[in-house]
Image (cartoon, rainbow, N blue to C red; front, side, top):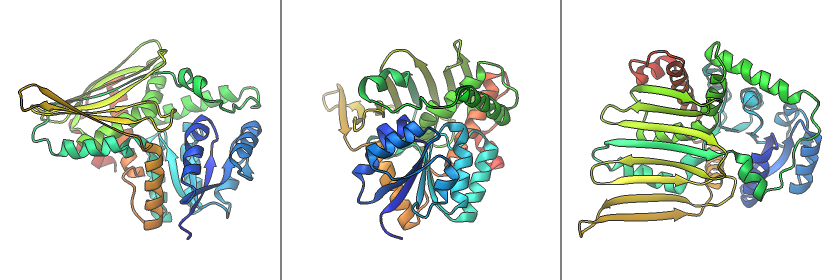
Length: 373
């Protein structure tokens, strides 16, 4: 295999247009987009012309079987992630699937089994875990002798409030009538398959966990490990899109909170407290490329006053993620954001949804995860 990976993209919406395609152009000495797929002809042709991609498909099955493709980026709507990733893996293609990798534990197990059989690399798109500020924070947290508290916070404005100000995204205005309603019905069907019957608006709560919160919970797990259990979880608001929870780590508790509102800003951070050092990572919106991740360390200074150290890194987390994918494929390495790793989020989300719906917490989360693996 050439050192240059030929990438096919399934789903050419805003995340592909704003983030992945420009990032891959910048990494053209290692990764090259050779094929794209979208159900919208307008989007397909517009993106193809803009980024110079001649192999264009309306059906993802044709893209994953193309001899012009070594690896597939799965970036279409969440409900289709599992079926596209499965088809790509069966076709012997390496896969980078945007989060969430799938909607249910059953889908995750099927994907993991197929990945093992095919012997390909499958990586999940948790780009926050590749940010330089995060990896340095992980090193610092591992040095802490005693953690007393942790906080995971992610309260942001709706993406269109930011996107429409800075990007001219090609929209799928040519989709057949009723396509949106069909997608929403499919979403609801798959939430039911994952959790059983769910009352509104708790189906939207689960979708929030799969989408926005998967970044936070995934980062929490890498930074702190898997919690022993969940002390409580609750959702509020007319759309069920405000969630809080407390994760039990034995010697400390990690407080979690997430919500989506109408204020155009991005307020996301993860913070770890010990008696003599506080380590914090702040994230900005990924839809403005190369905004710095910020690492802040607060500790006592030599004069007895609080001493703050702040560092910013400009290398884009998506670019680091793609470079890691290239290295994993060409060197046969297992991604840290593997399918099996992402499965742990689905277990946590199912436990959170059980608590939100009035169930009881798991006795020991570690045992529950092992039992299901």
